[in-house]
Image (cartoon, rainbow, N blue to C red):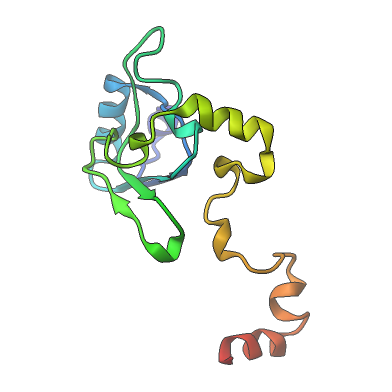
Length: 145
């Protein structure tokens, strides 16, 4: 809200793997700020962080901001879009066993889904030179293949 009080407007918001950030009143206020804009909350299967804090945690009433875009597989397999409420029990929240997922992340950070959003699409190291082979010709050759 500090930005809006300074005269800024929020037209778009996109998060990846975000936890629940507030209660229902917060979610409603967020929707009102974005009213004519776009808000997407990208989730993927087996990411434990999107389940935290639990909706029924101490203090209670935690919920997500809208709109969920959920990937249950690879990016190429497509996504499902939520209904705009923020909480869609048939998308990422369908896999509710977050303690098991959190333990799996702690046991093996390299396979933790929270740390690898859309990583399946990246085939090479993104160091600048690998994309173009160091030249614009390399970039064009990659496009024309």
